Length: 173
Image 1: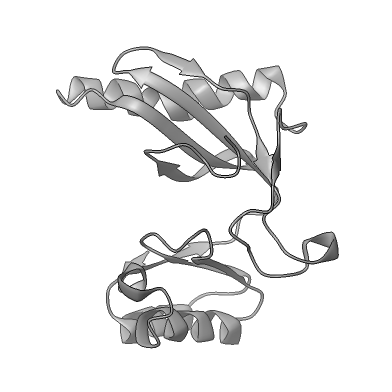
Image 2: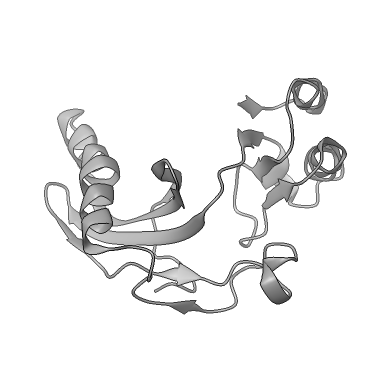
């Protein structure tokens, strides 16, 4: 759910169970996502973003999501509006501290290809996440020409799109 009012976001959190994800809806130097292990942590994140303005205008709107468990991978393609040329899959080192126990960083390096993304999974992501966006925009008369970067969570239930960006990933590229 998307919120432009901190009180509404805080009320919504009363209906959720942890873990929950709080995202600033804007550019936050790769640090605008909090995976809150408790509802109190989630409430604190909403207050820091929306009331404390730690991300400036990027935190005026927040997204509250269920927490998906798995490995995150990046799929980056270049499109001419009809066809795509995919880059190899990649993964970045998101969290600080050993065993990914710390907060998200802006990215501390990356590796490619992502070991968790098999050829079959890569094709599934292209077919079910990337091409529907490219084809949908083309059908709407707004063909997308440029770089499309998808952040994908690889879960036991399959891949889920976390985000799309109209840019190269950093540090993945």
